[in-house]
Image (cartoon, rainbow over all chains, first blue to last red; front, side):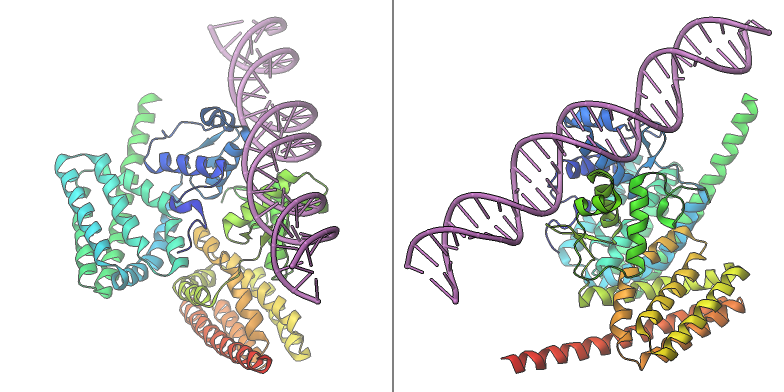
Length: 235
Length: 235
DNA sequence: ACGGGAATATTCGTATACAGTTTTTGAGAT
DNA sequence: ATCTCAAAAACTGTATACGAATATTCCCGT
């Protein structure tokens, strides 16, 4: 709505710290940060050719927004624990059906076309077996329909759980068996949007969240077993 | 879960900026900030006897969390417009029933006792016709049961709309006819909590939000008419 | 060789300073 | 008296500096 109220939406950043914030968030969103990299304000400042203060502000802001986690030695990607992820699934079940329903009534033809395009991209990525590309396409698909939610407060609330959604996606995409489910789910959601069928859109996204939770639980289980066996081998 | 992960829960703050953040948030929560006060970092720093940096950090953090709004000259309470308030009612209808249901299953006997005490205080305030005191009591009642919501993410989401709740309360409390409705509603909610009746608690809070919206719409209408007549008189 | 503890290094939080920008103030002109 | 424009004040953002806390390293004793 208003132009540059907050730089959270990739709009132009006015201050240096805002620019660094957006740049780093882009890296986080694109998965360019390994799970073990430690972001230290001095290093970030040196990279951008500024003093510690803007870098520190950007890092602290990202931490407060939940995209990074402050440690005693630098900032790292948040190692979101199992419990937290489950809690956010709970929240998403409360919010996303209503949001999708409202989006169904509000999406413009141009926005629907964009959703169609990115769905085609997702299909191509799946066919090519390119997980990274599929991940990006799903991210864009989700952000696109969320952007059409007219309730600003609801929209912002959803955008806050981007990190959780991404983390879950990264875990569940590892199993290729999940890819068709995800793409088909998005296609059904898109079709509901095209029909302006708010009820179907809400139902579909609710099923989507449930399926996502199931896939996450399975991936979590497998990761847990793997860790157990490997540590058993080590010990 | 973990002890001092974030200082958002009134836990011990480690750094000066964290302490200032918590103190200022307490003032915001208790409604001690007028709609026109401008918080400037230098003034805050002087009040707490520190330099600008911790004060600035605290203010910016509060702004990023949504409790304050940055302006060209200091930070102010976010000025919610009509549309935004209605949107947040929508959000509250999605979140609060589930939150109250979970709180009903999670409230300890001590917490229930505290709710009972603050309800007695609310009754006394209503009998005395002390709007300010009733406002505070309702605020404490609400914060108390929300504090018992075990889902951390959901709890934080609810706490973000404190400003809206307060603004609505201030408007609707002006009409004394609303006072019995509010106190009676809280009493029913408390009784549902005591019975560990999650369904009744969820239903009750949903009705509460609807009633709050109706009262707000009426107050808004009246304020609108009053403005129209006064401007007509002036013109 | 291995464990413990002190010295070192790294990093964080805060203080102070300065430049750019915007709002307010005040003097002068109409 | 009011309007205009310039000077001043206030505020923000960033730079640099310093003390404190914590991790790391290295040396020494066992």
